[in-house]
Figure 1: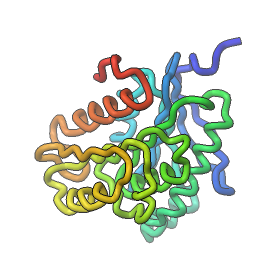
Figure 2: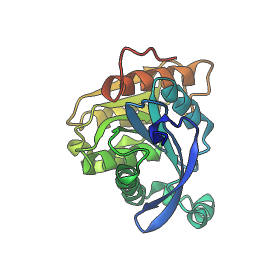
Figure 3: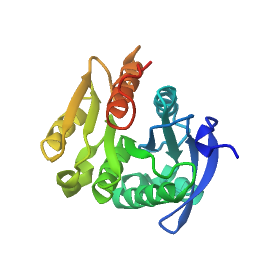
Amino acid sequence: MMNPRAVALRTEVEIQSANVTLTGDVTVPENATGLVVFAHGSGSSRYSPRNRFVADQLNTVGLGTVLVDLLTLDEEFVDRRTAHHRFDINLLADRLIGTIDWLDAHPQTQGLRLGMFGASTGAAAALVAAAERSERVRAVVSRGGRPDLAGQALTQVTAPTLLIVGEADRAVLQLNRQAAEKLSGPHELSIIPKAGHLFEEPGALEQVARLACQWFAEHLGDPSRPCP
């Protein structure tokens, strides 16, 4: 019987989390050493091209990835009109926690070292989940995130945390600096020169991917494997 961890193809799954069914894409390379759960940001989804770009880079160094829609289809419809759910950090965090628990029980992913990658408001939810599941989450990366929205949970995050912000994203950069002061675990703030909030400038997203790859490889995988 084939080892489920030898499957490198992306698999769509239904994740039971916080009394709802969420849809996710799971990719687990052969001999994976870790698994990174992506929490998308405001108004985005698991199809975010920026998150998928980063996920593809992580797959090349033997890290599995989980891109999950944290809202149901009905909630996404409401959110597109009201932008209400995307700022409900507790709701998003509860569903990330449920996703972590589901992954721990799934044969393809159970036992793998776990990391979180959050963008925009998803970064706050990832940090809250990391605080609630501190025994499982070993590393966190935030891309252009709003870690400040995690509130008091920041003081309970023990996982090594990397905050990546664009130099031109001045308001968010200041919020990240303030949030970093509250983190109790190891942390770093990396500023991408001349980059804005979406890292659309030439080479900016590649820098994000390399930094995230190096961070997760160090804390979840094999740091000797070169990142793309």
